[in-house]
Length: 345
Length: 238
Ligand SMILES: Nc1ncnc2c1ncn2[C@@H]1O[C@H](COP(=O)(O)OP(=O)(O)O)[C@@H](O)[C@H]1O
Ligand SMILES: [Mg+2]
Image (cartoon, rainbow over the protein chains, first blue to last red):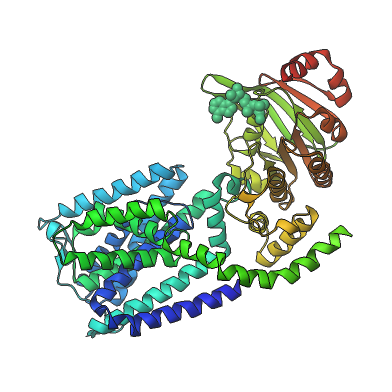
């Protein structure tokens, strides 16, 4: 376990280094930044769905709440450090209440998907209807479908005049993704994470072993929402405007598609799925011949039919079938022999 | 007399119009090994589900290890020291044998202790050779053993086994019997079984269920020779 944590840390550092020094040779840092943010958003769903079996159709709600919480707090406070924290806390608290309601009410699977979807749509509707001047929180007007532009973006903690923007903001997002990735790894490799996988595999058995499924699912759901909220705040800083479209149906659906294409049950899969599909969307965005959504849908169908496990798990399988297998055999053979003999004698 | 560890009063469970168990008064004593028999649909599995908290009984009450547990959830009852092997194998198919047992051990112990406990159970149930195989890929008998391992590693005080020998080879059953006797040193056990030979080889007292009610409860030999039981149970089976 310690071994794999070490390996993952090295991998994460290498990955982030590649992202910072090599990727900008091919893709602009501005575009890379949004790929990173979407990657983090996908990771938040990949964690609760792929490892906890919670299919949330409304991860966009937490993303949007994080973005709005950041913006409203930043306008009122006038700097960004505390608002970043608020952007993580607001969706987390909201998710813990919603999660407790669902899991203690024994709502699961399709009901859970429907409820989270409905909550997202309600937020979308509500945010769209806040154009009037009466919708104001402190100094921040919600602005309805126009959204909220013009708010203080990220600054160095303690110095509201030292903005973090451009390439620096790209580095900041890349490192944040690396940190979130490692935190996710720590959580998933801890007992808590391994128990979550047990719950994904067989809820009944896990409760018969004495685990409180409801409480554990609520906690995992909350962690996922916190990460989505952080991604939302990063998005607000990147876009410099937040609009109700953050809560839209297509945003919700896209997160799920990213996870399926990248591969559930892995940490890297959703990130790569999100980055790959978003990049494709940007490239396609420059043409008008074919509708974007149509292509995303087509890719989803192709993946479900041809690579139902997604990219990363398929690559893992290929690896262990070819090279990995040889290494494992090489390592295990002598140990097995010595172990098998004693009980027979 | 010895202490009662499990007691039900007028336990009734209805599924819509079907009454699966009806007014069951049942007592189990510490370190007892009891067999539960009865034709298919008699309500044996439902009785287990009520006791283990998978179902909330429609009526009646359940007392266990000094607590009234009638409305407790499954995880609360499990934490009290009740382990169950359900009729349909209930294991984590996507995980390895080691991971399955580790998850059961981790409930009561910290990680290093859970690792140690898991190793111990792997040896005790001779699962060592398949420790790193996925449970979903194992043969039926092996999966039953794994599930028994999940129960055993929790050091339960009451063990419920729903048809543990079903579909197993005689060699598997032999090993299963050994494990059951070992569990019995620390726990009271109820076993649902159909195999008469198996029952005679392990139990003294037998409770016969019929249409959700207790028909008779007596020593295994007297139950076997009882004409009503032969009628109800053996008659239907053939
Ligand atoms: N979930 C359920 N819904 C409806 N009826 C059920 C359910 N579970 C069991 N039953 C009914 O209850 C009766 C007892 O079933 P069960 O407890 O499984 O019997 P046994 O284990 O003795 O074979 C049967 O008639 C069965 O059809
Ligand atoms: Mg049954």
